[in-house]
Image (tube, helix red, strand yellow):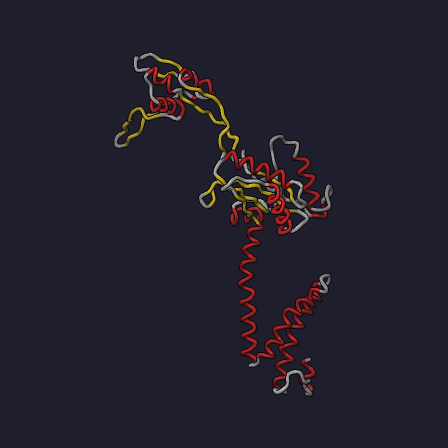
Length: 341
């Protein structure tokens, strides 16, 4: 198993006995799972993990994507990034994507010996493919149906590398020699997976954020990588996960907020037919927001205060316009206007 998800359904928090908070529980679970050799763990919420994976392609809160061409250089760069981000406050569950380390059987032919025995690489590949994967040696007919007759070694003869080494190859003269006489056969670590994004190879170093906000953590990591990480020409890093969503949201808000404020001002002008009154009411938006932030510990009162400031300005301007159109700032003298204020 290369990667798997295990969902644990928690009891009510009142029934917890070994931890008081979610962070403390995850720390104890991680400490207990460290005893499993060769296994790395990452804690997240099921819905959050799936949304991160669907939107950005990674399961972690933040992903550092390293782009380049050479797999070995990407692996070493990922290990270097892992060492640099370990000491950043707020970084937890750091894990580099495994792209190498898959055992493979490699067959390297000795071309001089092939020429000596009168063999060619194509015939040798056909023998190896026939022995382990199977090769069509004929056709079997059943009425109108036709099937290929596939020949390959028995299951007990293709379980070990020695079976491949002792595989006999027929020479043009009719004699046979084992494959290991004309080829070097051994186990080697090959690429486990090759991930690409926008046409370039990449490796991902993912981590979760606890105790800090995502933006400040990424800024600290960016400063550390810019100072210490040296990549060859053509290699570069980008950031994904929740940080990517945050950047996209900020870009959208940079357009949406000015457009919304502009539409509000236009509606105010069409309502009161006065630029001066529209500006006065428009200033209540940032000023009331500042006032609402003065009392962050009392959220209900802050929201009420924010809404009351935004409501009083249009009422005051509308009443003043009805009772005294030539002066905005002179108080109205009717009982009805006093009731508005």
